[in-house]
Image (cartoon, rainbow, N blue to C red):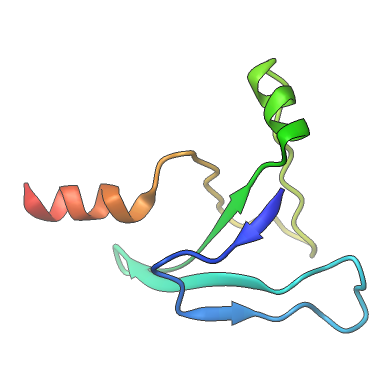
Amino acid sequence: MTPIRFEQANIVMRAPANMPDCVDVHACRVVCNGMPVVVTAWRPSPEELVKINLGEPIFLSLWGGAMQPALVTADNPFIAAENADQS
């Protein structure tokens, strides 16, 4: 998966200098229901799309000693928020 820039991005999370396989990631920092949230967008490669379409899992790896709440979705959270605001 490749991190991509998206319209709502308002910060760039810089890759640590000591992690050569890590890349900068465009992100959007927002507050949702009183909680800070960081949203990023990722585009799968053609090879990854084949695996996804075959039902293979998507793995999420987070560095550190604990797992923070995370959401992996194909739905654009900004469109969902706009629709909720219009209701």
